[in-house]
Length: 240
Image (cartoon, rainbow, N blue to C red):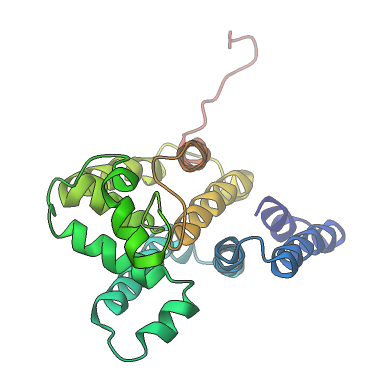
């Protein structure tokens, strides 16, 4: 993502170098098949970032984060509904989704038992280990979807509070900011890239309680907050 953001915002000479690095890394993910979730999320993130750079209207650019959230929610909802409602061809689609539909079905059943307050943080492996073992032949530590993990662990109320807390990172730029978009586009776009990568990869993997997820989430938020801050005019001779 860093290579892609750098390439998209660089001049023609450097652009080809960084875009080539990005393509090479995507090719590495594809050839080695290390993680199909990482490959898919990287491709979707790259598509959204490219759209952001191509867009010239600031109103369209302001929609990039809401669009990423909407895509994540729509895809997660669609997969969960498919897991619950599919009867015919369930095995086919489950295999296509690397058996995610089975774990989503088991997870949703547990979510409905405590929809408002959830079962508690980091309790999925403890409470659902035998369920996933019986359904999939292995014990899982998470539902492999961060939305389902939030609903299972925190319930609807806790998940909403969690989402509102994250939303503070993405508030509008203050009116007192007199710096042009070009001066801080890289920082903002890199923050968006990390955030979108976490969302799109979180559709099929990750855990909202892991150090990896939380660290990158707050790094992303910090970058976007930095690009939101108004510039203070410090005149020469003034103590910093």
